[in-house]
Length: 424
Image (cartoon, rainbow, N blue to C red; front, side):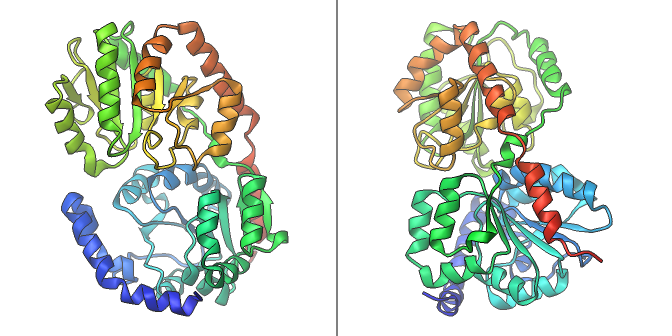
């Protein structure tokens, strides 16, 4: 498949894309809004000539936050535009940066939509986070001489096999990239094999390690937990959970309560459109549940705190003694293991961590990560870990050591971007 055939298929798929937007909009009404932006129409007022950063959704937006902040500080004279593809990503970008950045949805990967967007924005530099590869957007940047960077790039073996099946599309696209800043050597080799130019591939590490925790955040969490009278309660968090995981999490919590009746679970679904359904599930299963969005205090009889707010995940982690990171008991690939590690928490996960293999290996080798094969193992390990404060402290300290030893990717990335940014 070449780019022209891909473009034809994309146009033919537009009715299905419209149907998908409609169906997603039934669960999350925000998907029905700003649809014109997805075709480069009704774009907000955008100052041209700056830096464009694309972060597809919430996870990439959070990962990109330190980079965007650094770009704003280093280049105050340039407008920074941040695009995404999802309403939750949009909310996160606005919560993080407000009016400090320009923001809109990235138009679909159609040549005319990409051209219209770039002609409006005229960026000096395009930065795509992780592995959001759109052939027409990249080609339109190359036509205009806009340096295009894939930053914090990751590419699993499975994804590489998928891209390899469409070599006629993938090879020219990667060859047009100005720089691919990858997290590991294994991923660098996969990009080279797929057609990226060797001299344009560098190993910078993951900027996720450059996470900085506000020193006041743990203090605020301790104060809130104290206000609940929950200093001595065993508190664990299951964060970024997906459909099919919540039932396993609640079953593990029920078994914990049999041993520790004062146990508290903080349950944080990954996607906001699932907040209501997970709340109903908790109630249906008989758990006394309070929603974080209600701002009500957690009472002694409450068994579950549902984290149904945006932008508070680090704070909710800080409330807990043990952290389970979701998307890993189901084959979703896992989520960011470093956020709880940065708070000195012992980290639990399921076996499906293919999106974070290198980070998981480092934490596992240091003894900071405990993987469980299924919900049964999670239920067995929870009371052991919650009843062993010395082990928790050792795991948390080991995680912090891993985090600190691997920092520096952000500085390397900023230096590389600075070399590509045209002067004058």
